[in-house]
Length: 119
Image (cartoon, rainbow, N blue to C red; front, top):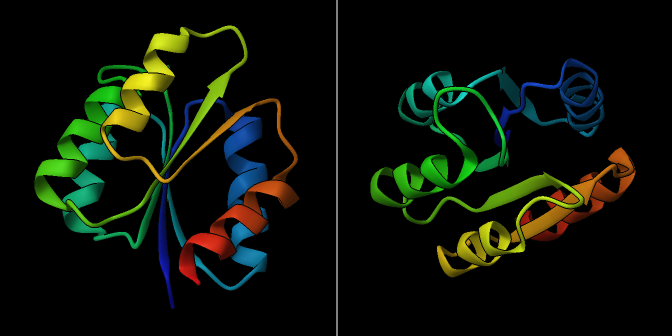
């Protein structure tokens, strides 16, 4: 079973994402901030990381940097509100993220993108 780490501080979004991915048979772990996220990268050992850009304590870019050092081959999907700095998104892609999904988004679209990454 593939393991997906979700780092998102918006309770509604994170609950929808977790529900949809569990329905597809993935094991998920949901954390609400960057500190919990970096710990979970090491302890949960995810096959995929889904992270928001704007989260407490460590932002999504810091999460990506951390993941690239400790788990360099783990794919990452970045979630971000429309209007957030385009520069941040470009930096995320330069760090090798697999995908970017602007908020708001349809959880079914996310599920399709996750399946594509695991193919």
